[in-house]
Structures are given as structure tokens and as C-alpha cells.
Image (cartoon, rainbow, N blue to C red; front, side, top):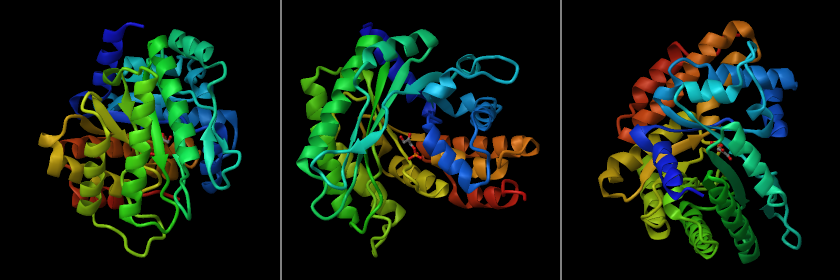
Length: 350
Ligand code: 13P
């Protein structure tokens, strides 16, 4: 392991107000999103969608790293250029999702454990060889009556830490993603309590497994009320609750925190990230960035709908969302302008 390379890569991933683009949906997840829009559920449609993303003009101005999936890291543009090369040529660091998905946790109804540790050392070596310089592993934590349990939090935190240690051994920066889900009626306060407990447990396990904090990125959820909670929160309340929780639980040695979007509407994710940076940026030890999938891709996918004639308009929408999130990192995101642009020039055509 070259420690300095890890530190440099982690810093680059959150430098210049840029963020990560998660385009690492597994085939079943990608197909689910395609099915809703009537896009064929084929290898070729997934390849074409990923080609549209990686060839978006100017993407590297807002995106520092792109997370691929095992299928897409092996794919090429129509002209034969590997996606990894297209990404790297655009100044974007290639990354790779390496977990193999969340399965039911035995003895814990309603809870999941993320799998993928078996054989991971060999897979990481192959991905490094292919050009990846960072990796991602997502753990999911559901909130409900009597959950999350200590067993679920502990098992997922330990798996995240073992994954992270293996990544650093292989020269890949681990993106450590413990996601507290939005589904449920729980309050903003409850999400804050759960998120804090999860993060404290994750960092204890990272310490136990000797993970170098300067060479990793944390990818957490924002602290939000459950989707069906009767009392929803303002943008500023979310910003305050999220930053309070992170300040309590995330060591200052971590260079960057890149939020997942978790199914929030795209504009809302940008507005909340913006509020955190407006209110707290000058007082924080780490960069507050983004690592969004849906909040960057969704509007573009709704325009594309699998049609070649919609590619340019979809790329404009993708580029627009990436730029909005870069502005949010600077605390310069303007929700009113965003809505005007989205409503006029970027709305889906039939
Ligand atoms: P969303 O931004 O759609 O939550 O996806 C982020 C991600 O990479 C989930 O693992």
C-alpha cells in the first residue's frame, strides 16, 4: 500500500468543490429504473445509458470521480473506447462498487447485511489493474419498531471496516457508505440518533481494523425525517441536524463526506447540501460533498427514455444537475434559477 497515493486520491475526490457521480446500480436496480420508463432491460440499453453519461460534455468540471459497476467497468463506447479510458480522459477518477448486495440478516427480521467479503482481495487487485482508484460498499440500516438492532449495526459496521482495510491494502480509497434509510414514519430526531449510533460504531470498527482515516471518504445519508413522518423538516433544520450529527461522530482526519441522495428529489438534495455549506462550511474539519446517483441521473433518464434522439437533451440535464451540486458545495446554489431552468429547457419531451 502506498499511503501517500491513498491520501492524494482521497483529497482529489473532494477537491475544487467537485463531487462523485454514482453510476454503479446493479443490473436489477438499473432494470427497475428502466422498467418504470419503458426502457428495454438489456445489456445494450444499460451500456448505451452509461455511454451517454460518460460522454456528457464538461462532466469533469463538476465531477471528480465516477463509481462504476462490474458490468460497466468492462464495457466500451460504441467506437470501442473503454469507459474507464473515457472517464480518465475527462479528468474523472474511475471507481467501482464492490459489495455484492444486501441480504436478509439471519435472526433479525426486517434487517439486512451487506455481503461481498469472500474473494474481495482478488477482485480489488483486478479492479486496480483495470484503472479503478477507489471503491464503494453500501450497508443499509432500516429504521422502525425496535430496529435497527445492535446486531445489525455491528455486523454491517464490521463488514464495512474489513472492506475498507482490504481496499487500502490494494491501493484503492474506500468509500464507506452506511445508509440509514428514509422509509418509515420516524422523526428527524430519531434519524439523527440512529445515524449517530451507526457512525460511531462504524468509526470504532474502522479504528479496530486499522483503516487510515486520511485515505477514505465517508458516504452517509443526510439526517431526514422518515418519508411518511407527519412532521417534515425545513431545509435549514435538515442542514443543522445533519451537521450536528456528523460533528459528533466523524473524526477530523477524514478528508471528505460525500452524501448519498437516497431518493430525495434532485433539487431538494442540492438545496440541503447548499444550506449545510452556507451555514457551516468555514467551521468544518472535512469537505461536505456529494456522491449522488438518483439526484444526478434521474431527470436525465426521464428525458432519455432509451431514445437516441434524446441523448443531447439528457446530457444537458445531467450536466445541469452536476453543476447545481458543485454550486451547492460552494453555498452558491440558487433553487429558483434551478427550477426555472429545469421547467423550461430540461423538461422531458414525449
Ligand atoms: P442515491 O444517491 O440514489 O441514493 O445513490 C447513491 C448510492 O451510490 C447508493 O449506493
